Length: 461
Ligand code: PMP
Image (cartoon, rainbow, N blue to C red; front, top):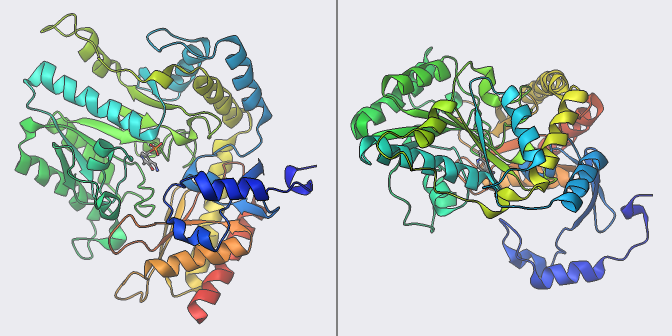
């Protein structure tokens, strides 16, 4: 019997939540008239709330995280066993699961070598920025310290991670920001800054070079990019883009930092999003899918060359990366991550993502054929976006409230989808899908069916 089938009364839980919990990304006035939603159980791709409602979760825990699905007892057991044996020691020492997981992870990332543990995507990115800054100081007298980031990309919630994010509304009211972060243009072909052209990808990459030349190549240490932009509207890179970006990084000796916090561990059908594009990053960060939300763990992974800047620094042989993350030493993280990877391999989930991703894309194109409001369909693997527009010719984005109305209607039908939300000025109009990597055609049919009905309703009235 599931929890939701028992006759538990959760009214006290709801009232305590209403009185004391401050929800993320939420305006709380609504809870004066509506009960806060409390999720109490999950199994596979489904979740149940405290009122007994069952939902098909098409966004893996709301923010593309629970990649292997809910209720995985083997992960819970691996975490339990590890915690009873050895829960924590500062990561200046190692751990058995840390050692095992690092080896397994690096096997999937040819060219990469070292794994630095912390707790969240923001933190993993901050570690990467500190690595870049310290190399700038060690090697270039502090000069090559600037870090480029892209319009519409998101790299986290801390002030410096926000300083490196290209989402205007998320940044509003949190300045002043950390200096030394410089924005480059986005690469969303549907929203081309250069009109219609055959070589959009090349133009978008050359726009990065323009910024480098403007800033001075000897001041730019790194660029951080999402392989497929997530919260900025599920933006898949245009043809030729990544090759050119890699070339530009090499030309100016700029470290390429790929933020795999969303794409990491299977979401796009390969272990990492960047692996679709034949590029060789210097730093890769990851978090959400590393342990599918069963433990808080993030990783900053570097090449041996980057690591050696700290191990063998001729100007200061005793220097090292003077950084720590207290809970980067909690062994629950790598224990969960190791089992999470084992599941992805044993259940052939990368294959499933590729097959189901193709099916989902096909079905979404069907929605586009049927509904004029769908301007663009984008995605890679089980990571898709539907951009909604008022008019296909002018591409005027629908108001954010329209996308939210579609999300709300799907929710009322028992399907949880997402939408870009208060992050970009003018473009909060993309519906987002990222179901668990275990999903079936029947699950996808249910998701697409709900969106179809919701679009019909929203456009009718
Ligand atoms: N990078 C990307 C691409 C993200 O989408 C997010 C979170 N949505 C982060 C970094 C920040 O991760 P966290 O919330 O774990 O700090």
